[in-house]
Length: 113
Image 1 (cartoon, rainbow, N blue to C red):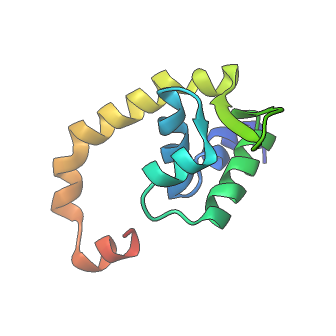
Image 2 (tube, rainbow, N blue to C red; image 1 turned 120 degrees about the vertical axis):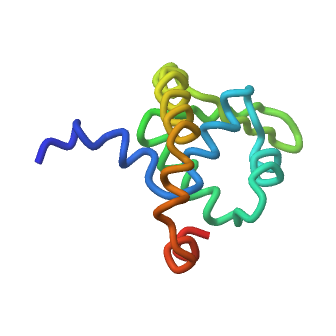
């Protein structure tokens, strides 16, 4: 299997990674800012996802030599290039949501809450 074909899918796997990337489109964020804006995410899950996105080359971590220490997360150039891709996915989702609603069942919906 060619891993390059599935790079985007691996990067976006799970519900939090897309939301983290979306938050960073509006600018650099500190850990606490991300956690506050992403309702329901735990510190552990946020840390794991940030580490994965850094290893994948999507985000950068910048630390400042201050007291207390200041750390910010920002999108890399690769991460910034995802904006038109995600915008297209969002547009498709909005256009096709009604069709999805016809097919959805309560049981299916519960799986993704």
